Image (tube, rainbow over all chains, first blue to last red; front, side):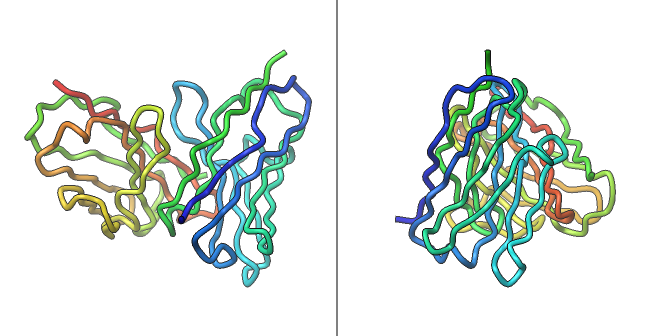
Length: 117
Length: 107
């Protein structure tokens, strides 16, 4: 099946770190730019990070709100994309979605990250 | 960063009506705009890409238009399953951004 499945969410305290993962299947992962998008409770969608493909040198881009704290990476051999989140803040509390959109209409089910003391 | 302004924030309509949702960019973005639908407690779904390109499996009542800074998502004869939130997104810049959304609700 063509799908994205996130994992690794949970409850952490402010200033702590967390790494969430996304497993892809059913399509040629190595050809797809991948993204993380988040949605705080009751709020709209916010683009978080982007990683391009090998021919584009795995270039990465970040929203201003997370730049310097979050790192997106991928492992094409495992069809995985990751988001390492450091120095977490309460405002990072959100559902985090892995997606290949807009090139592919493919979204994960989301993983909840809660930052609270 | 490119700012996308969606209007109206809420649109109240009767099933069977046709509607237009607006998305305005803070600078020209050619046709690098995409539209998503999000129903409550679900992941978003891509409706239209690059302003007017249709997506496989999306009903033909959804269409998109525009270029430069002004874009429109049109729904011809709204059905009950269409009541949800709609977002536009730009990919002209390497730093992607979303609009704040338009909620389509039953009148």
